[in-house]
Image (tube, rainbow, N blue to C red; front, side, top):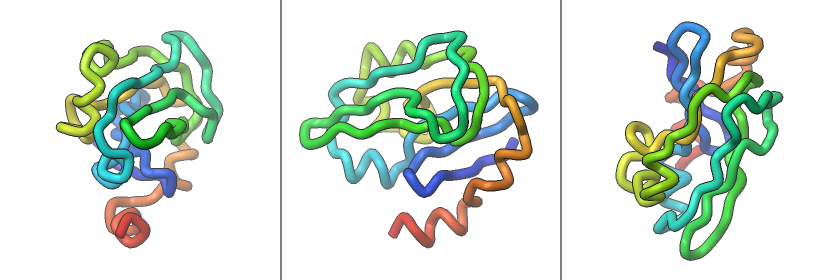
Length: 121
């Protein structure tokens, strides 16, 4: 599995041609208590950097972007029911959506963990 990051504080974990996307610890920390998430529709085709959803906290709202292009194949219904999962476990149970990659080469434009840590602090 490959784990990459965006400068906008999304993470993407790739396993074959499927990728799971969520927000990073830094993003959830900056937002504060998450109270609502808007997730993309299953079947929606996203281009890289398209707005895929929204995360709202007690102090701000932020767009969630698609790190790469692809088709949404699953959304995290548990997150919709309990948005605080994005705070408690942003890199695990608090994932947002899964997509089937349109072009795996787009992953090359994303940050590895060491590069992401440089901009997240």
